[in-house]
Image (cartoon, rainbow, N blue to C red; front, side, top):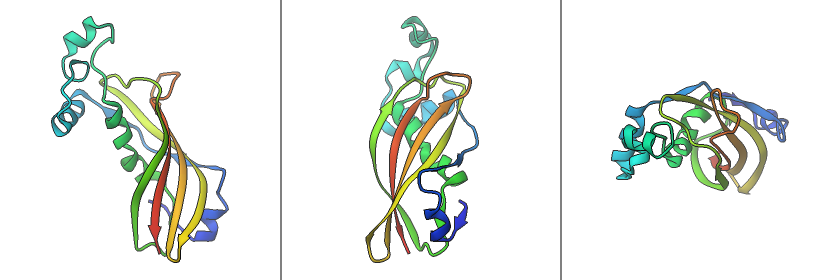
Length: 151
């Protein structure tokens, strides 16, 4: 994660911060996520049934695509140089806009929406994230992501 001063980060409010590297969402990853979450719906784990249902093959769980935000953020999320610890605080306005087909690649585009002091030594960082699907017109999802930074 890129490390900057708090003033440098504040100067980027309202601006795109960057885009993550591409991440492949292969069937192995989808199947492992199905095992971890006990969500084995055929659209995720049975290519023939998913094909017959008109999906063109299996698709990733929406929550799998969402869970990749942490990995994507590691490439671009700005962290104050005084950070002791960072935690997920939550998500607002999550929308799953298009399915991610098995074998496709995704990447996140991050825009810094704001930084507020929640209490002394605690910063609430708000970012809008859009997850692009390689070669597709519609993004997989969009969300406002909240992070709590302890300084």
